[in-house]
Length: 295
Figure 1: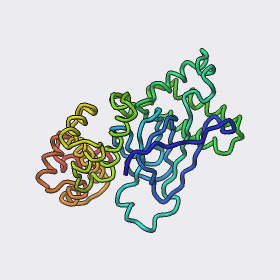
Figure 2: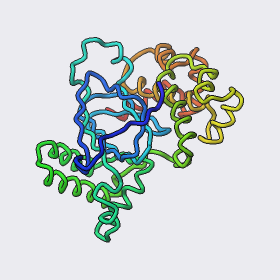
Figure 3: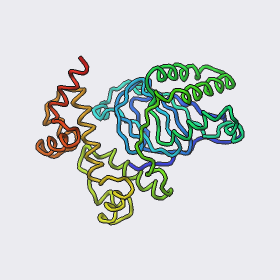
């Protein structure tokens, strides 16, 4: 599994933005990126979304705006991967792709478009859209499907206008843009590493395989990865595993030893130590607190 550059439809006969309905048994798009911005609404399905360096749970209603070349993918919970009888439309999403100058450079440079242009520039690290804005945008996105092209364009402009004026409901997803100001070669190299971790973090991860993906020796890769991401490769894998364990602790009553192994840890003692170090509390306390929050 590697991060792939996705090519979207272009040409004089194409619309100014593209709407795509996704209906699948499970989300299966690979970790990928593209020059176009993306607005994605999850209609049904639950799991984890991977955006840049960040991992979050997603569920119906999840709404994000992603900037140009920000790598991403959505994956259903891993228990669903082994299920053969999932409904064909168990995973549904509405996805809009558009370029930063989708109505032309002159239009985006007009005074009336200044707020929208600023929004699209700030979206390079991604926004999770929350609160009342999330509900409003979700309703308007669902309306787009049945409209003729010009009314659809007007509603889409209204969506962008709303997002540009509701900064309080836009939660930045990425914490640093350092990984996305790299050269194309470096960006693709780092994305290959993240794609490998996404596919393997619940199992044994091999440093020699990752170094090979980056076309480096193991020692050179470790130095390079730390320089680019400000974290070690081991820290990255541990972060993925801890967040996976948190999801299991919140959503299941599985015994701790089972959660330990399902999250990719080799033994319970190491799991407890790493969990406490990352979450500032033992896993049993975390489970108790999350249960109290939901009561």
